[in-house]
Length: 166
View 1 (cartoon, rainbow, N blue to C red):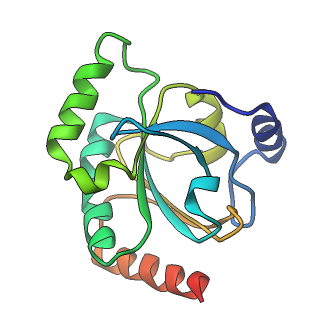
View 2: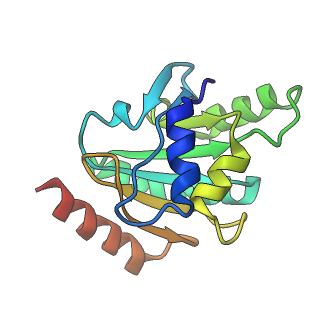
């Protein structure tokens, strides 16, 4: 995976990725095996990313992504796998594929590099909690939330997304 330097330089200058800040351009692999560039892959439309920085957070992302995907919202899971030893990564990918419907595998992003930079950008409060990030059509952060699935919060995600999609 190649990380474009201009994105990292921009991110390094910005510090915390807060509302209104641009999302860095990054090349990633999907669980289905494809390669794409984010945020360009979102097609100039708002998108929802659910990040995981640990196995526990990864197991909790489906509680967020499944209901949003069923509604047809553009939701993506983003798994940070850099810390996993290289020889273990194929087993992790295999387990993820087994547990995820094929249709959602195109929207599962795998990050093998840049964990330190993404941690500096996203500042996940707890590794064991998913981090939900809502991007606007320009790839700017519109809203973020760290925590396990909650009906009240997913309603807020839906409402915020709908206001961006108008």
